[in-house]
Length: 190
Image (tube, rainbow, N blue to C red; front, side):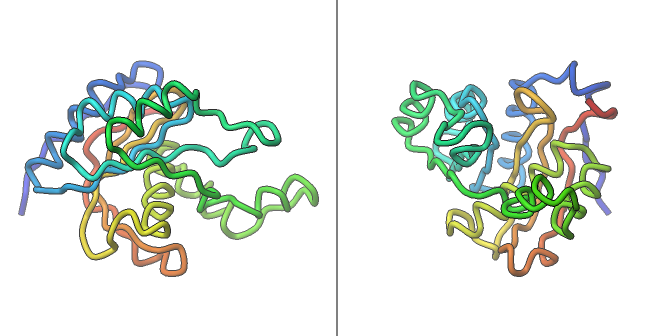
């Protein structure tokens, strides 16, 4: 049996990206985990992660191009440049828990099983759903191994408020993924 500390923000609005990243780093170091996967839309959280996770296999996962507007990448070019200069890897890919199904929902006004799964995972928190999603995306891209644990970090809105230790899986073996530990998360929905 283990007794470990979990940090809870009272709400996503009170979350602190710096505290989330630091708590995740401390847990990664304690467990000797070298693979870190971080969600970052504008790139601001990614840049902060690059400063904290120097020497780790750091993967910054951003939205796919066209997520909000056709042909537009939401990550700011200056943040993208800083992330790449730091030595971190930058992953741009279709979202593992929406992808083409989002288009079906928008066009036909119906949900498919993958988006239903995503909505179910949000019961544990939006950030936790994103942690699972980006770990799958990183595994599919070959940037993390499904043979060893990683730390995944994401948020429920702006910044990071959730970090978990998990065993990643490829999308075609999604149900092999396992969340081993929650490091930090909000107690309420945003």
